[in-house]
Image 1 (cartoon, rainbow, N blue to C red):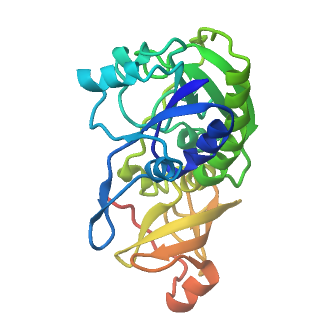
Image 2: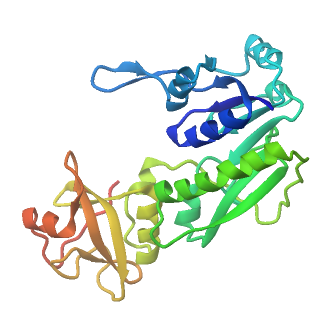
Length: 299
């Protein structure tokens, strides 16, 4: 099948690796190079570099609303456009530019967790499972009809990184199967529809009034949570829940166990600003934390 690919981050590369072995990639659309590093030199996306390495034409338009860009896409003569983490609005003219439309790889069991951060929100909510949905994009927010879905269990240790890899492993064979045996999608059932908004930085400030269970999920979902210790910001990267109670937001001993709205949170992996992550043991060797210290919320 003749295809166009639209995507940007490195985790999408296994999809490209699979596509190029069985199908004809006519072009890649990805985000434009951005300044990065100390020298702020322009850095190409992982998908951009992959395309160049495989001699696939790469395009980086600032918008797909431009009529010339839309004509270029249509004139390529692709049968379908594969979209995976492109993070750019796709207008109607592009949605209808190919016979089979835009096939999007979405990391949730639609209609649950439509939107920008489905993996994060599934972990934060304590979902026991999520999955991959192959859907045809329409002009709504992940509201298009679904070709196929596969469930994936969420473990008690999963972070967006580990869960994302599980979902990626499922997405690749799903997509190849669909392209080999193409069929029309089925409309989504609106029952249970919910949205997954983009993570805001303010959400990473730990609210000790929440239960220890919720805070632990937040830390995994956000891949970190901040609190103040001696007026310094510290990032908690891993924690575990213990039974118990105490004054909310206050250490109950000298071992970085903190009372929450319900139960106790034991902080296991921590990181001071400008420093590398460290275990609780090593952290406490350099920073004394006594019982009764209030780990103030960050405004």
